[in-house]
Length: 210
Image (cartoon, rainbow, N blue to C red):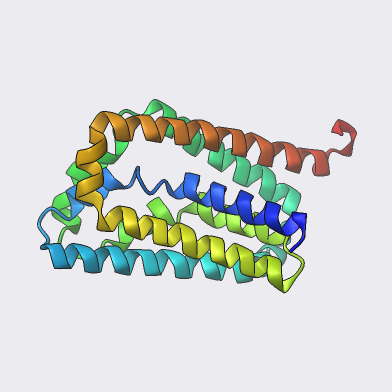
């Protein structure tokens, strides 16, 4: 395994964990599953994490083909994906307790279902995460590097499962303020990642900037 493969593995994993924000999903999960039994909550967490993993795996394997079909280059996708991530970052930094607010407003609607929407899609496997695996997939030129990205997807999905499975314990441990702080830090990291994506795309589109 060479250094480029290790770099792709680490960058993809960090990006997915920041975008999916497993800790940040806890307040929403707690609120939306408050009417479920313990076993139902475990089943819901498992179902959502499986769906998220499948969506991201399909995006990793076929995302490049989708881009080619619509005649979209990696530079354009870098810029648009970066702008999207930047907007998500700003929302994470400026919205107060978005998870708890959303969860309370939607609990009565979703408490009896599998919660694939909104927890799985778009909160976990959202446009940001899907765009990230497509972009990193563009830099994967070997079966090994593709495999490492798929492993990242599985790790990130499993992290989300662990967070949801232990949502009530995590929520009590960190408290609302602790989870809010974690979300803000994640927003800062996401903003930095977004700027890097945008710069990479602009340098390809406008070589004179290099």
